[in-house]
Length: 271
Image (cartoon, rainbow, N blue to C red; front, top):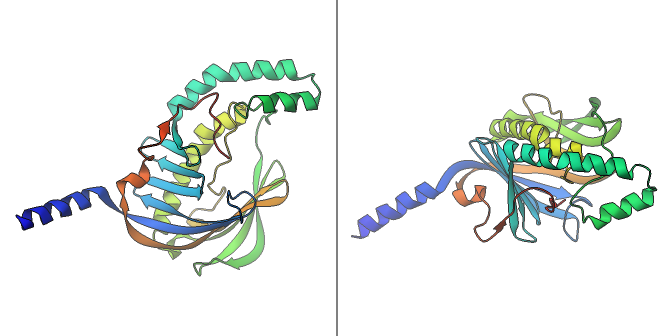
């Protein structure tokens, strides 16, 4: 009898645990949602899934098989899932309304436009969006060293001629699970740009910028990532180390006791 119970427990454990990779990260800066501006988190990789704990208030789960992204708000205990179908549905129903509002408000003073945006509670962004984004990559010629011991070289990313990122990149083969992390980050970046970013560029929802470093060369990872806002460092995130890990299936799902919310107007994705 004891042998049967032990075997059943082993089978149950193997069914709920998956072989994966854990990447330890540390973030600092004014954009980190902690009192001291520091947060130690992790990224979990399991084949075609990625979980990023961005700060104490937010987690992001990318499911490449969909593809889709689950955005989790730990402060208010809710989550939402966004895929191309839901993004297209939001755009088709809301984009004409936002365009009409922009046209009607075009002649209002800036203060009145800002007041109206504030009254909407952050659920719609009425600010003008550029017709297209020009991005360029600049090699600085400077070298660095990541906390995990890897050497890296500094690259700068400019958007509309404004510095938006600095990335110290090194070979993805230089760390445990680096190749797997590189592959799923590239897939996530494409999804975020084509699906999530399309909503942001149209001004439908105030969705935060992608947490995935941009314009990283093939075969490389950003070991140190700095995101800028108006010339100031918003966040500085560093890869501290990585290891193989048995990961629970629940890590790639929203908590069972969190409320599910449908993406759309009235849902302000947390920054």
